[in-house]
Length: 84
Image 1 (cartoon, rainbow, N blue to C red):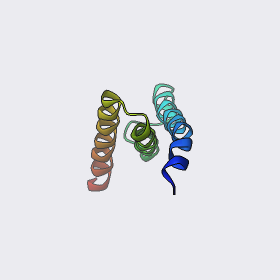
Image 2 (cartoon, rainbow, N blue to C red):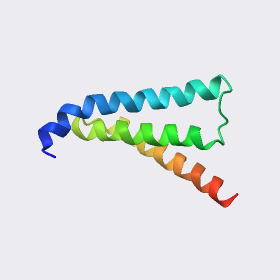
Image 3 (cartoon, rainbow, N blue to C red):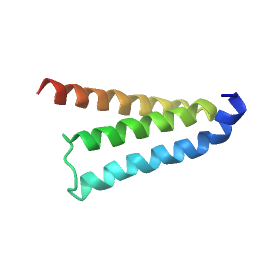
C-alpha cells in the first residue's frame, strides 16, 4: 500500500484501537470479563497495536511507550495462560 493511503486511514485505525482498549476497561470494571480471560487480553493487545499503528504517522513518544508497555503486558498475560 502507498504511504499516503496508510496515513489517511491511520486516524480511523487508531480510533478503533482506542475503542477496543476502552471496551476492555469497561468490561473489566463491569465484571463482564476477568483480567485473566483471553478476551480481555486480546482486546488490549489488538487495541494497543492499532493505536501504535496510528502513532507511526502521528508521532508522540510518550504514547508510543505506553502502547508498547500494553503490548508487552498483554504478551505476558498470554504466556501465563499458555503455561497454565
